[in-house]
Image (cartoon, rainbow over all chains, first blue to last red):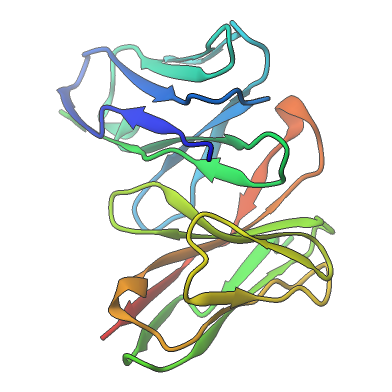
Length: 111
Length: 115
């Protein structure tokens, strides 16, 4: 069974600090996606990483896909209160059409 | 441009009751998914479908059933509701594109309480 484990589970930081969220699996994924979800809403796609070693930047957010395509990270520079939310990694399992989500990281950025 | 439409938005059930959560998409996607999300947690896959007449179990299928008679509709049925099924349920459809174009489209969710 393919699983996506995220760490940390919770993160509370001050505005302006940097942070990194990790998404790990023992299995290879053909791609991984990162979503952000706010209370009462569905997840919203932030980025898709496809190639091992790939780095993508979205303003203050930097996403990296591990060389072996088993892990990914999300780094936020100079966090802002607007970054507060639940961050989820997700991806298609190999050999099936299942699409699974990670355990989630709840981020709170204090002003 | 409706996308994925879920109904109802909220529902309270008594233990042992049954209900169907409706999901419809107008993007002609073959892949559709049902997830449940407990407070502060990630999404757990209940069932998925790769086309009309084809469904398969996800990570947490017990207590649920699905059907897929058309491309557009993917209802989720709860039989004999239990308090453990209290959760927020999301339906999603998925593009059949590869790599960076692979994307899920979500409905707005159904908040279900079983008391």
